[in-house]
Image (tube, rainbow, N blue to C red; front, side, top):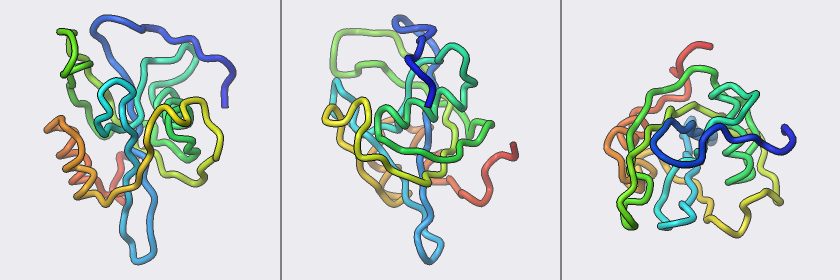
Length: 152
């Protein structure tokens, strides 16, 4: 993984990059990994601000590594984008948008940057869709087919 990251934007409205971390189970079933946000504890895909020197897809993969300890193959084309409120239960803050990139998990590491700051859990697609708050994100998760991801 790259060295110390240089985040391009930390405050205000903007665009973030998220990873839809998935793995295939025996029988063809797909499982989705979600993490809890540090502020509200709600379930979200790993996401973060653009990282200088990394593509949007690579930024999403780096965030997934730091937040959940996952390594894998990330698709270079986004599945779509969704809007969210940055802290819906806290002070009024502007909304942001996140582009969602598929990331097939091939390994989990036991030590990662945000271990202990978030919960990490695997869900079925249906359950993962129910766990997230944003309607457009719900739809992308529910309709996700790992065999039909955008071509690179």
